[in-house]
Image (cartoon, rainbow, N blue to C red; front, side):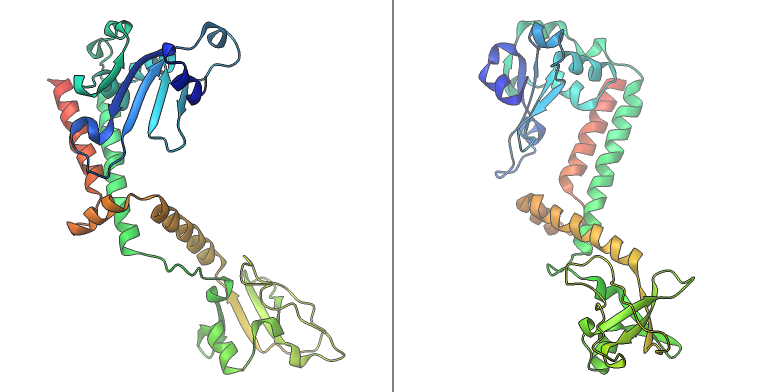
Length: 286
């Protein structure tokens, strides 16, 4: 079944509850309303090839588990599933009488030690992971390959952009040839060194290039400089840049501002989840 079919054919529903922060009065006025539920597959799907274990809407705010998948997770003492089965009465939007046959106590085991502790550890990691993004913002304008290139100068190096400016060159008028046995290191030439209208390919093909370009240079011409492209550093930058701006685009702005306001550089909502998980674990142990 699809999410749309479950919503349009509620006869297959066994349980539908408000979950997340609103279920435990931890929400803000701008918080989303999370819904979780359980459905039972029609016989034709259950015994056929169209079985679906879990569905959700486009924003993942509303998620439903097929009863078989739900019990499988319940037997593994999954915290979210145990929590769903123990939803407070005020959060239950619909409950089929068959759900009264499933008691949380019948499924609890020592697995809770691993599942609850592991989930709590994950929430702490998420809360701390926010610190890196807060303290290391990325400019909207993305750096390019040229920003990760340096040329050898004396006993040190200087940025390629500075070298080009000093020599009044543009990158499109330059060319690179690989240096044998030196990874990501190149001999650098300029078009003014060539004759008979020969052309160089430039250091990069354009602002969106992800690697340097190579040129064919006649023998006997001495390179003007030796250049290194920090390709590994560029790859790491691109990955972190993408992660940062994906995070900016998806983050709850009110929740983010609240995190900034307490000055601790961690996500307080993740920490509230941690406290809730540990409180549930303690209650189970007792």
